[in-house]
Length: 311
Image 1 (cartoon, rainbow, N blue to C red):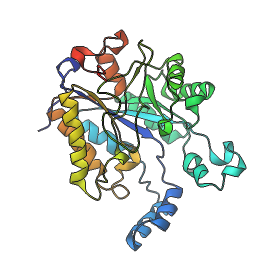
Image 2: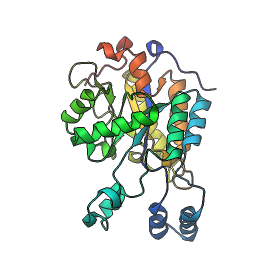
Image 3: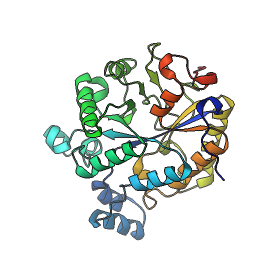
Image 4: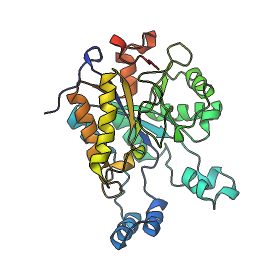
C-alpha cells in the first residue's frame, strides 16, 4: 500500500510534479504519424484519431484521477502561443519549424480549456504559466501571457516554465521575478535526465525568487513502450540519488504522453515513479505548494536542508 505524503519537515526528499500543456488537441500529428509510423495498424489508428470525435491528447481527467488516487497534486502550465497563420509571417507557413512551433495550438479563450483551468484550480492542482516560444526574451509578451492566464484563472500565478526550456540566464529569470513570479523550472534538458544543476533549488538573485531545475522530462528517458524496465531503472537511479542527497527533483510529463495508444508505458511509469517516491518518504506535489510549505520565501533554502543546492 502506498504511503501518504509526509510534511516537508519529515520528508526524505521532494518530488515536484509538473505538466506542460502544449497540445491538448491532436491535429496535424495524426496525419504525420500515419505517414511516418509503423505498419498498417498504426497508420489506421492515427488516421482514425484525426477523424474521431475522441481526442487522444485530452488527458486532463486521466491525470487528475491517477494523482487523486495516489493522494497527490501537480502543476499544469498553460501556454498562450502564437498562431501559425494568424501571427507568423507567410514565409513560415510551409516550413517544418513553423508547423512544429505554431500550428495546432490552443487558445485560453477556448471554453473547454477555461473549464479545465477552473476545475483544476478548484480541486487543488496548481495552474501555472508556460511562457511561449519567444517570451523568454520578450518581457512585454510574457507579461501579456501572464495577464491572460490570470484572467482565465481568476487570481495570480506563482511560477511556471518556458516553452522548449528557452532561457537567457539570468535575464529570463529577472523578467519572471519582475512580473511577480516566485519560481521558474526551465533550467534543464529535454535530452538528458538527472541532477545536472545540483540537488536543490537555485537562487539566481539571492532573494525570494527560486529556480527548480528540471530533473526528468519523460522524453529524455528510455522509451517505456519499448523497454519498460530500462526506463524504470533510469527513474529509480534518480530517486535513489534524490533520497541520498535529500534533494528536490522536478519531473515533467506532458499530458499527451498519458495517451496509451500514442505513448505506451508512460502512464504506468509515471504512476510507479510517484508510488515509489511516496514509499521512500518523499514529499510529492506541485512546486508552488512546496515553495510555501518549505518556507522558501524566507531565503532559508528549505526545512532541514531539503531544497538546499549543494552544487
